[in-house]
Amino acid sequence: MRAKLTTLLTAFMLLTGLLGWQSGRSADSGATPPSSAPAATSAPGAASAPATPGQDESYRYTLLFTRVMQMIRQDYVDPNKTSYKDLTYAALRGMLSSLDPHSQFLDDEAYQDLQQETKGEFIGLGIEIGLKGGGLVILSPMEDSPSGRAGLLPGDRILKINGKSAARMTLTAAEKALKGEPGEKVALTLQRPDANAAGGGRVFEVELTRETIRVASVKDAKLLPAAIAGPEKIGYVRIEEFGENTADELDRALEKLEGQGMTSLVIDLRNNPGGLLDSAVDVAGKFLPPNTMVVSTKGRTADQTREFRSRTERQHPNYPIALLINGYSASGAEIVAGALKDLHRAILVGENTFGKGSVQTVQPLGDGVGLRLTMAKYYTPSKQTIHEVGVKPDINVPISDVEEQRIALVQEKRDLTDDEKAEVAKMVDRQLDRAVNVLRGTKIYQQRQAELKAGEKKSDSTDDAPKPATAPAPAPAKTDQGE
Image (cartoon, rainbow, N blue to C red; front, side, top):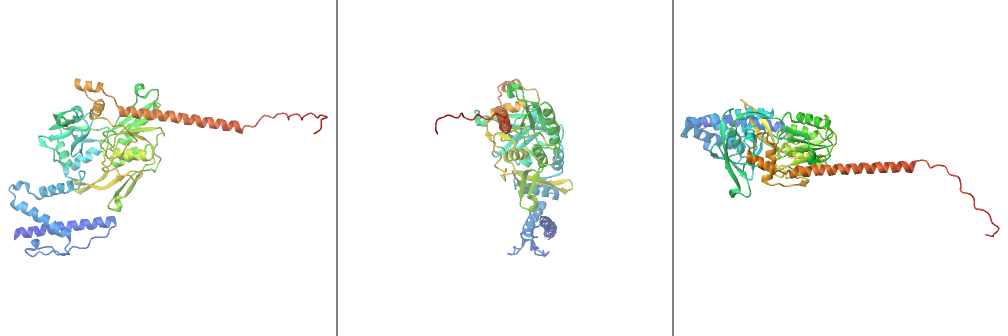
């Protein structure tokens, strides 16, 4: 009797909270509030009574949830695992992970990590992961981080974390397993793709130590050497991710290159896993007129249908841009690529992007926890969806896994092994070479168009000039012959 009463009281409290939350959401979005639930009764046995045809579903299934929770608390063999907090958090994790790989319940540790990461500092291994081909893969190892110094590369598949199989591990669970306190060690079993190897790749193990990682998101700002760019002054910048400071970092990098006489630019977004939406919009806005629509979102409610436009900030010169993308360019990288492609501001070179085009908003829930929930999907300025489709390059330049790994090795800021140095010596970045050729061709075309316009203007000037005065032709001499 006491257990049933506890169940009913718990159900009533949860039901009241749920209906109140639903009512608040409806009022915020302008939707019609749901009809009121039937009044609950506290009579014994009411919890097991069959639902009537008109009974409100929220009451019925909230009651089911609380009944199961109470049964676990009463009868489960290990009482140390059955606190209300543990069971509620576990239920929320399962609930969110069942929706999609990107929605997540953020406990106090995960919520704090997320806040630190967006500020450009966090504790971990310096590794961005995602789901691809049904498994966990590394999207981007960060430079000067444990993963970067260990030589991990984009595309490495995670088989085990601390000896536990990652085959059925959710993205949320994997991220949690990779994070922790500074100084703690994490053992990873990985598979590096190789089409010529048995089983599809080489399996190896690494042990990494967590540390505080400070991230600069704009790297390698430079003029490309003459061996690549020829006589042209072609700039190059690589954006690793989109954080709070990325737009400012890009401004400083471009100012330096423009001061060196840069006439065209390569922006490398390969292996960029994304980041903050506002940051991606600001980066794209550096090359667009003010108030230009960069990306739009569309969700279930009116408040999730929005347009994000470039801001009225300092614009950079209208020089030609080539954008490098690959299969690990995701989220914010796809926003920038889709916008600059649709608005004819850049030529995209490389491979189809990852296809992570959904919007996650982080909502604080109090007590240091939060909710990361997929609320909408991204659409490019031409209303093309990104999610599960990606952004297609204008010029498709597919490369092999081996070529991709060599490019990543060149970008590493660490001492390479002899074997790695041998691989780097073979490196040819065909995607970068193609982008440079595109920019050089664009420059030649622009010069010829300018010469053509100058010639037409000169010709028009010549035609419009006053003609010099000439004496009239003499009249023909008269003769004695008749007409």
